[in-house]
Amino acid sequence: MDGNGRWAARRGRPRTDGHRAGVEAVRRVVEAAPGLGVSTLTLYAFSADNWKRPETEVSALMALFRWALRREIVRLKRAGVRLSVIGRRDRLPEALRNGIARGEWETRRGTRLHLRIAVDYSARDALVEAARRCQASGEAPTRAAFARHLAAATSPSMGHPHTLPGEQAPDVDLVVRTAGEQRLSDFLLWECAYAEFAFLEPCWPEMDAEALAAVLADFRSRTRKFGALPEAA
Ligand code: FPP
Image (tube, rainbow, N blue to C red):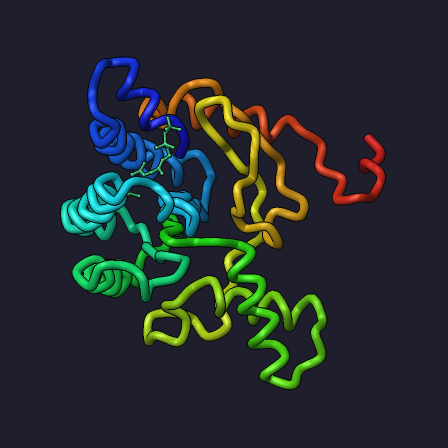
């Protein structure tokens, strides 16, 4: 969700205004996604490297996540959205940790959309943790076993009563990055092995249902071969 800061700067406003406008874009995209055939949506809200930002911006973001969770939970529940937060949780403020646990619990029965929000997330850290878990389990490191340990390392909520045992999110089909950035930035490295990419010029706060529909239509027009030859027409 890139470009909140630039969106605000272009309007002569503080960066935090851009993040607030980013929350409104999150709402538009989450509302539109199920109707456009999206069943799992992962939003990269805060990377493990985002702790390097100034303390004022970091605490404003943490407060914004907490506020947005509180404001949106009832709406998410009504819309059949199940919320999961991926990433480390131990470095987050306690109030936010509690808000996340409550949000995950309240929305646990949602079946229209699995909304995953990545907070304090690093794919590399998750991969290292998965390797550690795999080794500790004594299991042979097959793709299937590793993917299971990676899912557990990625979702701290795994093992909680509302999480299906061994639940793994599907591989990523499409990565959409806004504001003209063309990088993966430590996002779901294993899960993106065969992902398609779409790099959009508008900033995240400009995202809406129409832009999402357009990027999905483009994605559906692509031929995905997964290393094989395209099917004969
Ligand atoms: C990157 O843009 C954006 C972030 C680090 C924060 C993203 C957070 C939100 C959109 C709020 C979402 C809220 C919820 C509840 C999920 P940037 O700050 O790097 O912008 P820039 O590249 O223009 O500086």
